[in-house]
Amino acid sequence: MSHLQVEFLQRLTINSRHVLKYENHELQSIAKACVPLSDLLARAQQNCSHEAASDSKVFRDALLVELLNWFKEDFFTWFDVAHCKSCNRPMQSAGSGVPTADDLRYGAHRVEQFNCSLCGARDRFPRYNDPEKLLQTRRGRCGEWANCFTLICRALKYDARYVLDWTDHVWTEVYSEKLKRWLHCDSCEAVCDKPLLYDVGWGKKLSYVIAFSKDEVQDVTWRYTRNHKEVIIRRNLVSEEWLLQQTDRLSRQLQSPLSNAERESLTLRLIGELVESLLPREVKAGEEQGRTSGGVTWRQNRGEMGSCQPVHKPIVWTPSEEEVNNGEFYLEYSASLDKYIRRSDGDKTTAKWLNGVFQAESVFRKTERDWNMAYIARTEGSSQGCLSWKFDLSSTNLVILQATVSCPGTTFEDGEISWKICGTDHCQILENGCVDYEVDLSGSKWCVLSAEMSRGRGSNAWQHTQIARQSTKDLNHFPLSLRIFFGSLD
Image 1 (tube, one colour):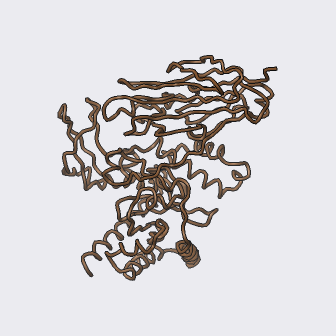
Image 2 (cartoon, one colour):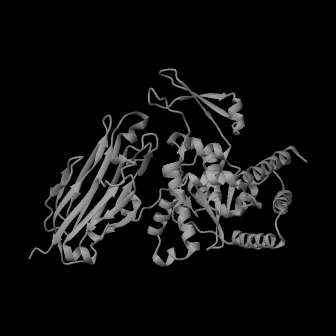
Image 3 (cartoon, helix red, strand yellow):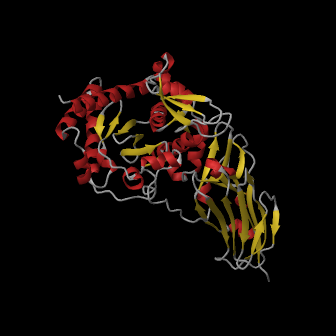
């Protein structure tokens, strides 16, 4: 056996054994206890139609999406460089450190060290590989994220696989009983069923992508690429025949305790998976975007920024029948809940800030777990961020009479937030932080409330302008509001 085969087989073997940790019932109980399951079930219920919610298989897929969002937004934290607690600035890498006995106990054979160039403070980051430890630390890069997320999926009884990309990334696959196929789930990006994300969006030159579960070791490379011929050329570490022999051997070992019926079921599922890999793939919405997890410099160094930005479909709010009868549209937004509530239409809710905005550029929702704060900010590395909300009466014979707005914005250093509201033939500048401010837009058929974030200082300039900042524990306050009174001018 060549040294390349030895190294390859070692990776296959180590990972096929590692995923068996997820099957520990006591560990699954600990993981499940970390999940706010009742909240996620409620969110999934809200975002499903009545018919879909009544189908348990469809509902399980909807719950998976909520689990991804919760894991990224509220549970796990990205780490690519340590920050000095005294100077509040990124520290400098100081190479590798020697793992302690406690580090090794939790699989941290690598330890990253950091120094502060201003005050000389030191910090260290052990790369833990033990999923139970990661439930406590809740931070890391893709390896830690996928390791912990896959455990949580198994704790919630999803059939999940840990997926290892030889070009340095890791994610999870979850089997959909409704769709009868595996769903790509990247907890770092909070995306589901976007397998071409790495090939198309990040520009990765994939070679080997292997999935590991309690039942099998499978080569799933073909799910993640459009161009099989190019990938074949890059797969030069071992022969295809040898790789198939090794994955088949490891799978047979894992399935040896199973009944004939269980093995037959897995074989039928594998046949379906192989057929799926032969079908040509078309790029879906969201697969063309570059990487979002990690700092800008870190992503640039890895060449994973991508050249395309996700296209946002503009959302235009129009009056419901009830609102037409009452002559009022009243919308509020909470960053802590990341939810809109439509007070004027039976308190109907819309999840996710992006699902309510007319335009958005270089903007995202940020959650600070250390400070328990949430807000909308411009993306890291951007000099400017813009977003707007639109209300339109063009489909009716009504016009706007008056608007009342609350524009919550918090700035630091010399950060600047500029607000304005425009009607058909009139724009008015608004003071940042205004509450229930009345604006005369009489005669307008539509209005757009917009905010522009700019300036700030240093590497954290993007964080010096924050919209709708509030405590993540504040679940009753909706600080951003747009209230429109309308009717006939006759």
